[in-house]
Length: 252
Image 1 (cartoon, rainbow, N blue to C red):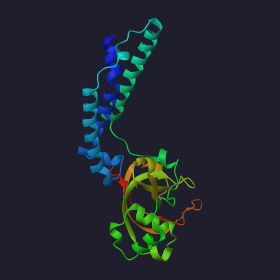
Image 2 (cartoon, rainbow, N blue to C red):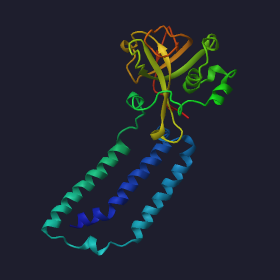
Image 3 (cartoon, rainbow, N blue to C red):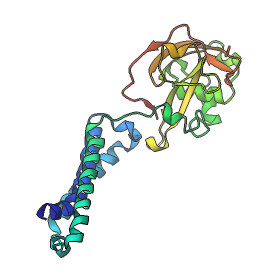
Image 4 (cartoon, helix red, strand yellow):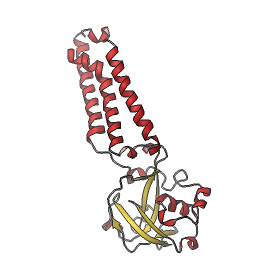
């Protein structure tokens, strides 16, 4: 009974502490960007500190209620045991999920549920126009995909070389010959992340580059040789270099 009363009193505090510790750890380990936009880093860490102070104050000052000290009858005792087991499982799951398992980035499984190169993930018409004449060597996957989506013609891309890194996700209209080199654009947090990608014509790519593996490509654009793909223009590289996932896998 004392353990049950203690667990009932401190369940919320323990869950709060797990969340606070996880947030601070992600912040200082440089992995908070897997969940939120960098502009919110300072705000999030400050709020985590405030939350920690409030948890300590709340549970240090508030005494246990009479209900927590009341002895349940046999039926209530059985329910109390189930509640205790569920509370322990919840706390353990939160601890493992937030502090033990490594943070994971979004993958093709998420791309399939969202609109690749949708209007909310690419730059606007005016933003894409501002890219023309810029430093093409510094263009991101989002920059190139926005120009492709806005309808920049073959003449525009004829003398352009893209140097980009992203993960491999198949072109659903011709998965045998074409894949997208993709990244996720994060405006606020990973929940609203939208995928963007550049089509890459490379027949048999599945034999060399698994889905969700990261690759780097330096290549020019050309008319997409695929007769099935819906993409008119694509990168047509002679070589693709496997690489590790970058420290900042998302585009902001």
